[in-house]
Length: 235
Image 1: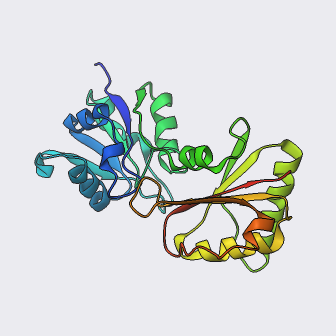
Image 2 (image 1 turned 180 degrees about the vertical axis):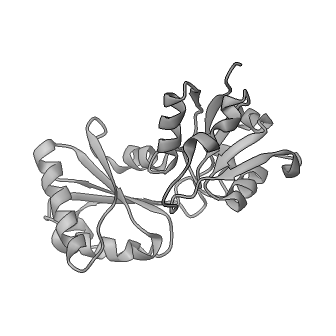
């Protein structure tokens, strides 16, 4: 039996940014099988992107990133049975800063062809708009946040950036954004560049990139509870 394919389906980063999704992605909604982070979000995004079909005719499986054990083969069983499957994350490109990467790895191990579709990546959009080194960069994910650890982590990223001459990129829970900004301004060196990109592609998009010395003289932006990516480049 011919196996199905696993399509990696990007979705808008901001809820009001359906225009950022190319036509090729819209065609993927002809699939009948999907693996998604959250069913409610996936259905809402599909409607936002123009899906007019009947959800009762589709088969959704949730990829629970908090589960102790995930049976990836079971999630991919439709592909093993010959059906194409779509993988969708909560926002942006699946399998990047996302639990979907392990499903993709399992697909390769099971001999299932993986087909990535073009769409917005918050990491790349933030890097592009920061004015920082786009030739050498490293994405660190979430930083430790216990008392005192954020300061140490930011200083370590600054040291790594200086040593490796690369941009350091990380994310944080939206309700901690303002604290990250304040802490970075406090502990990083004056000539280090610090940036954030918030609500990318959306109506509330805000991108700020300055040396720490200039940040210390500027009014702090309020991005509390907004999606954001942070970047550091030391010189």
